[in-house]
Amino acid sequence: MSNSPNITLDLRLGYTPDAGWTHVTATNGSLYSYKYAGGDDGAGGMQAKAGRGNDTANVQLIADGRYTIFGVVFQNDSSNQLSWNGNGNRAGNIVDQNTAVENAEYSVLITDTGNGNTVFVCDPPVKNVPQ
Image 1 (cartoon, rainbow, N blue to C red):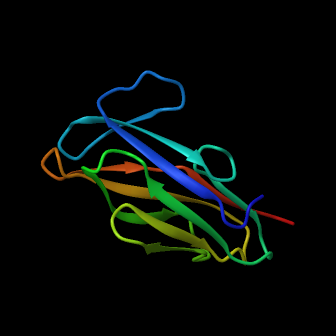
Image 2 (image 1 turned 60 degrees about the vertical axis):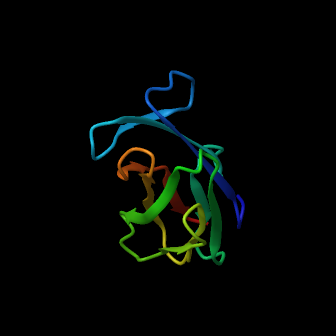
Image 3 (image 1 turned 120 degrees about the vertical axis):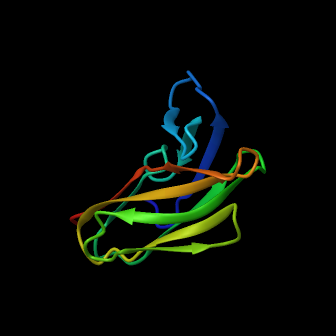
């Protein structure tokens, strides 16, 4: 398990039938496809053994320049392990303190500046497992 996994996020407007793509509906009703690569599981996920220090994941958009990161939110992070440090609107870092066992999720909020600034969510898992 890596202490600094690199994660990329690719995005497309419309349905993409290829393997590994997830489909989501944006706030304006448009259909989008997204695909994570990298991370600890090859699909944007993070997993670390609790108690082994911070895990910092570098997240970068590799999609067309019309897409930007609007923000990152965390779910099921009951121990407040996760935080976001944005590096502009196309990349940033998720920092996991790894001091408690939990199964949390992060969601990257994307804005499509080429489609009325509509917003959609892309979300792989984060897991802190016992040592």
